[in-house]
Image 1 (cartoon, rainbow, N blue to C red):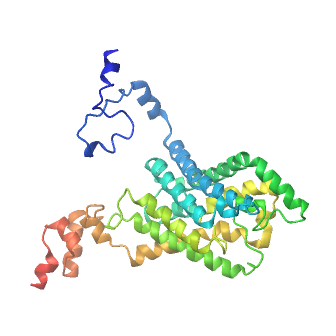
Image 2: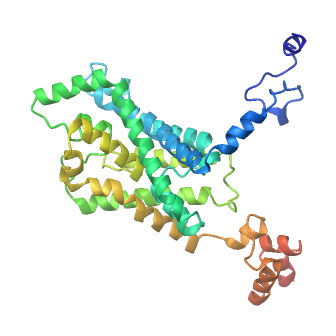
Length: 351
């Protein structure tokens, strides 16, 4: 009882978002309930692969669900007397995906690394030694997360989508089109978008743009991005491309498109995979485009010496290998010099 009374002290901050602000406040934070041994034992027994897979599925869900919900508002209210912009717009859709990505990274990245995209998972395996044996698990989880987002959206919007589907059929219009109900769930090209080569190049450019931004944000040597800003910066990169190219048809993510496209096939027919032979672009182009983008960054923009200098990595042969490299090249760049001797060797050499 006395403990409960003590927690009512007005100068205390209650349990919640307190750890994040503790360094900025002088008030005492109420103590958390002690962690029990039972809880520790339970968490220890949880398979790590299961935690990571669930985090990836949850993260993709958080990213896809608000985005397609915003698309649903855009499509379903296209003929509303108030106008579609009263309920949604391309601008709103971009923000829905952007904020969803930020929430996904904030919520799930501490557990799984926050890939949320099969192409990013493959690139981590290529460039950052992510275990290849985990790649299939991650990709399946990502597709599953998008699938569940699509299924839940269909359940929550079922009366409206059912009415829209019936009205579309009554007018003799196809369910799979850029104005039909299938468009809510997955990318469908417009009636005049018949040039697959053009659509391929648009998708490749958009995905490469996003891939370079992601890789730059994840570069520990990048002084312009803090860990706190990374989720929002990556989210804005997605939104930026949606605002610029959504009217042409873009997918940006294999898992996001394939997972929801399967849901669309369940409710609106398999034509979502056959329509204009476009689905392979939406599903697959993201992978080579992201490999190209991350390879571009790795080969032309990565500064590994800066990573070593800022103690984010080390030379494979330790300090001796780093010293040998610097000596062989005849100069030391500032970042690496700090790691070796604390002197600006480049400045000394110029003198």
